[in-house]
Length: 335
Image (cartoon, rainbow, N blue to C red; front, side, top):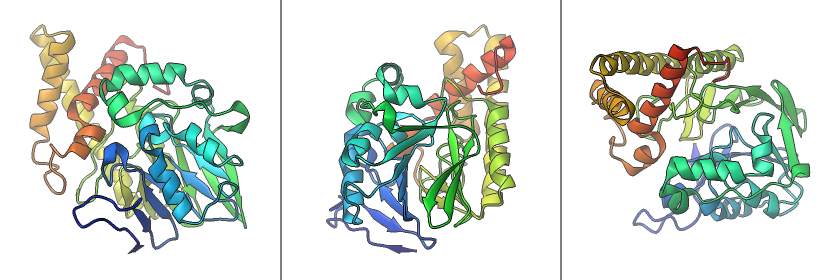
């Protein structure tokens, strides 16, 4: 794998880090929160180029600079494909649309309206992220409705030259999640549906945030990827992992383990009469104890990147909401 990444020698990027992978996929570091290797955008070089993911609004200039350094002018980008509308993936979509006036913004039919009018998306994100909303993400700016391509399951995106992307509805992490299959490279672009594995980490960590985590939907989405026989999975957080079959198996196993541990902890909390924040604290502490040391290889658990992306408390909150809804009979097939 070749790379033209540069820095000042002290770890501070001199320019947007760019990594050219051996299958032709180009990773653009979004420099989320001013840190490297947090969230990647992936450029597919084709007659009609497509960028998968763009990162948050606050650091979108890094992505625009990266695209410019790769020779893309304002008329050159054909598509911005968003796996889902969480702000670490899609917050800068309106800014990309403004910088590339011919580009279409491709998003699930379940999420498109929130990009045309992001008021509710921004308000809910501000509640979830708290102070990080202003410090790390910023508000998503609207995408003109006529620039949006609302995707149904198994729609295809024609990149020209005989190359197409298959777009799959892959809920579990979020109801509006899309997976992208590129038959040309045999790669899946999985957003957050497979989990998080920062460079140096030897194992995946599940991504189970509230409010829409759904175990059965997540496992079904992993099987949809497997059916396509991919060789490589591109994670938004962060980079390619392979072999894909083993990665997908591990992702499913990890999801089941985390749900099992959270379910046991919830039963313990109920037995002690714990409710509300006390219940969440018990589930979080149990998950931390159970998986202590499991992810020691690579970034430490207190690494700010891992805390930002995959905090145990956020995962616990998503698992707890899922278990409450399961137990009350409120679950739907999507979440």
